[in-house]
Figure (cartoon, rainbow, N blue to C red):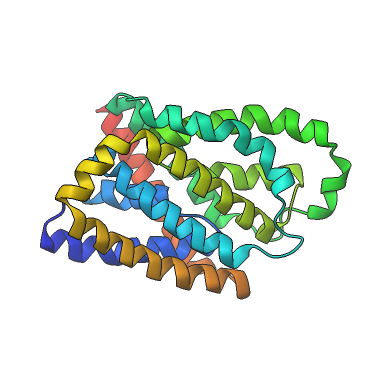
Length: 258
């Protein structure tokens, strides 16, 4: 666990990650793991804490982004039917360090892409052209894969889901934020259930540290999601965070190859 000096570095970074991710409707798990990795900690040890932060920040994002007509649980349902049990299984699945780092590297690249994705993409007006059967045919296997990967590396999967929703034309940009936030909350809770044993140990021995992370994330998530839902998102800061995520991804890949 971090020392006092390391906490003074980590807490502002957690606040910033929560604020920027929540501005696009995400919980920030890949960002938390990225900054933890860059500081030099073993990211796998932080997965239960990261999932807690993810649930809290994504819940705040969902409440701020959920607007009539933007959020559709009917369109989200095919993805979560398979992702929830898959995320639980992924949480139970103890992958090797190499596999974990490779999967996290891919997630960081996806997160960076999501942060710089143009706001104009996505059009909920295209949704009626897709039949319910076609949405289920796509959503079930996609949800299965996203849930499994999310549970294995300790993220919610929203960084993967948002571009898919926009590409399929199932919603617009803010609608994808609301749907991704709900997806993240459900998957993170399922993944957290798979890490229940590790979580109980952390809460009993590192409760003050976990609480400090929670406070930083809640404040950042509240401010970021309100800003993103009401005003134009802070694009410059998102580009900066995307660069950090790419750097962390390269660092992970190099550590695997070395």
